[in-house]
Image 1 (cartoon, one colour):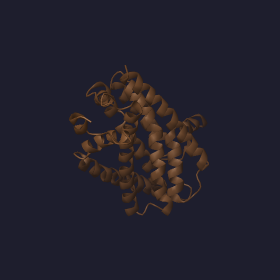
Image 2 (image 1 turned 90 degrees about the vertical axis):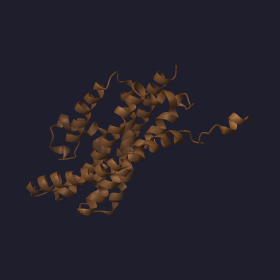
Image 3 (image 1 turned 180 degrees about the vertical axis):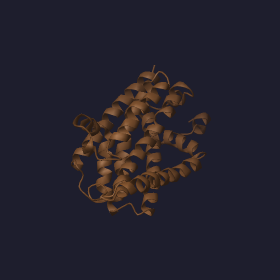
Image 4 (image 1 turned 90 degrees about the horizontal axis):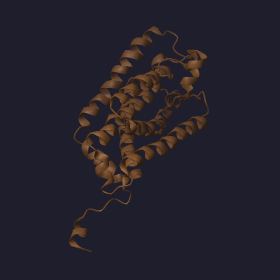
Length: 264
C-alpha cells in the first residue's frame, strides 16, 4: 500500500454514516438555536391552542379535555413540519446552489448512501424535536398514558413517509418557488384538515377521505391513541402499512431523481 493510500481516510463500513456525520458536523454549530425553538414553539402552541382555545371547548372532544386531545396531533404535525423543512430548501440547495450532492457522489458515494445519510439527519432532527415537545407537554400534564413514549417511533415512521417523497420533489423542482407551493397547497392544508385541531369526522365526506389519504392523519391517529391510551380509529397494522407504503414509494422515487441528476 502506498503512502497516499495509507493517508487517505477510509469510508465507514456503512458509507451513509459518513454523509450523516457531515450534517451532524454542520449542526454542531447551529444546534443552540434549534434547541431554543424546539422548546419555545411547543410551549407557545400549547398555551395558545391547548389552554387558550381549549378554554372555550367546555365539553372537550370525545369526553377528553381539549388540551389532552390536541397535544398528540401537535406532536405529529410538528414532526411533519420539521421533516418537510429539512427536506425542501436544504435538498434543493444541495442540487442547485452549493451542490453538496455532486461533491458527495464524487467522493465516491453511492446515490443510496447520499439519500440514506441525509434521511438519517432528518430523522435525528425529528426525534430531538419530538422529544422536546413530549417534555414540554408532560410538564403541562397533557400526557394521559405512559404509552405516550410510543409516539417517538410513530413520528419517525411518519418522517420517513413524508421526507423521501419530498426529497424527490425538492430534487426535481426547477426553482425554489416550487417549494413554497408545496407548503401552500400541501403542508398547510394537511396540517389544518388532517385531524390535528378538530376531528376529521366533522368534515364533509369528500374532504374527510382526502384527509384519510394524507400520511399526517395516520400519524395523528396513532399518536393520539398512544398518548390517550385508547384504540386508534383504524387498525394499528393498517396505519403502519399505509405509512410504510409511502416510505417505500418515496425511497424509490428519491433514488430515481437523485440518480438521474447526479449520475451522468
